[in-house]
Length: 131
Figure 1 (cartoon, rainbow, N blue to C red):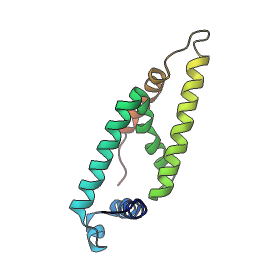
Figure 2: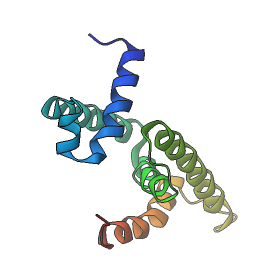
Figure 3: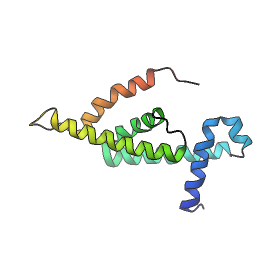
Figure 4: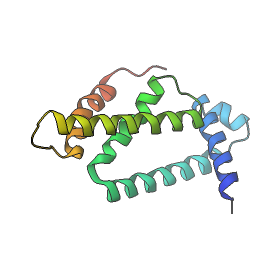
């Protein structure tokens, strides 16, 4: 069983090496099948848990990593920190706008985040991906 420190170190290495491609990752000694299955399982559980606990506000979690990658955060640890900061900023902006745009009424912040984030997500899915 991996300790928490070793898990963070191993997963950061995995996330730094996997974008290089399967051939490079396997040459560097990464067990591809086990690594992908582990990361996919952890990601699926974290996503399901956040949607269960938070609800539609977790929609910001879909936009934060894409915006962080667009901002130039490429290494795993920096990308995670950038995603967190961008997600917090997006949520704060959505909360502020949901209170101000419909004053004296307040629109639910989850609904507002979804209304603002859905066009971005559609644009991100529709744009051609770079190699």
